[in-house]
Image 1 (cartoon, one colour):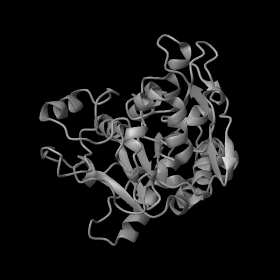
Image 2 (tube, one colour):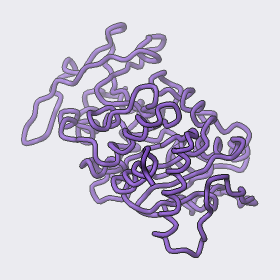
Image 3 (cartoon, helix red, strand yellow):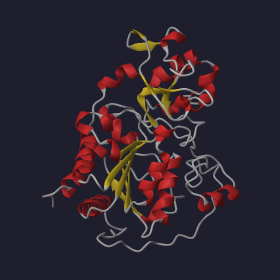
Image 4 (tube, helix red, strand yellow):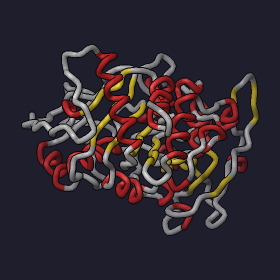
Length: 350
């Protein structure tokens, strides 16, 4: 459940694009290289310099069949893990599809197709919190149904990898579904960052209140269910801040918020992980969030440059990405690919 991208792709000026190259890790900077709408993008073409192959990695022939290139990339990534190099997995909504959670993009039941931009904002929440919960939040993120979702084989494989390589494997997830913390998919706190927040916790928006910047309140909404649908009947049934008594919002990053608005998003820690990465692996992400731009910039600036892998059912990496040619595409479902990587990376594997 990839909740949001506050800096989702939009048109931008050349001046803004130049800023992104000089200060790529500013969380308030928009997504400048990944505009999904080419009709509105003014992205200029860049000279693309190929990064030489890294030691221990084979560069697959671009004329090889997709399945062969994917298999080579799986072996490469497994070897990197076995060499105990720093690997950061960035997981998106595609990972949780097999758990029954619809993605935001590319599906007929995707909430992205509805008025997510209009309602998924702090501004809309503050206009009328009760209406916001009933019109937007409970319609798409009903916490009463959270117990129905279980980690799938992809979550479980990542958990095994992180357990085997507890000093070098890390996961940054854009999902708020909590499946990386659940039973067979559990990843330890020192290896996991839920950078878009997580369900079951709440924050407030009162200036200078600690619950607006650093603390969280753990609780739940009091809802009435009717024919499978949940509804909050009164603002009194919404958690209120223990400090300032304001109505609280779920701990998720909304479209008009930034990664550094609350400490629970751990943006600074995520940057440190990416800075130290020898390989960055995207799993089921749409590349429509600012975090992916940050990851690409770190991959490019790291010495040596970090290897980049993209696990998805299609090659969905926009051609505007400067690292498009250097990205190893692994085409397939995350719940099928990650167990293969785990099998090859774990001790005793091929």
